[in-house]
Length: 316
Image (cartoon, one colour):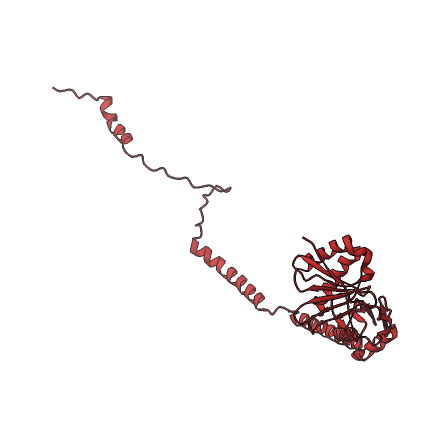
């Protein structure tokens, strides 16, 4: 006869298997309100619902902004343009009035400066008056200067405006160095001028030469004067012919034949002969010829009734 025995370990094996398997989901407890009843959770609105709620508000704001931008803003550009045009008009009118006023200003005073010995200040003023018809602003200063320099004794003139209504004129008179021919003078630059008064300058040396040789002859004259001055001699007349031959008449009446070449060399030779032999007897010398290669020919004044004697002095 068999006996049934109940083993405790065998009865708990299913429970262990349940533990090894997936644990059952716990039931979530619902919150209980104050009254003791369970409170149900309201569903959260979806994104579409949120967009629907916000949609009408955003659309209304956009319309307000568009309406605000569509309103015309007040502009004052037209006022700025009018002010600029008025300013330009005022400046133009003022400039035109100033131009007309300056054009109408006459020359009321003329001042003449410079050392005037042969030209009177009144004559200078009378000369420039016809050129002042244009008034102070439009007077042609170049024309005034040309008219003044056309006067016989005026070598150079400068004219300038002195505001508001005056002209200042400065003149430099001619400085005659020698007479040119019979009716003209040469200044320090070898320029020929012909004044009306000649009597006061008859003591000046006379220079003669072909047309166009005035400047060259003036330069030769100044060199000759510089060389003769240390010896106490002067030049009374200097001529140059068509071939370029230069001849001079000294202050004592002696003729000095220089020629057309080797001017300095020939004058050195004359200086040596003069200091060695001629200085003490220049009153007897009539003619000195320097046109020799190595010597000087001297002609003396012959005593009354005898022909003139000549002697040649050779200088190395």
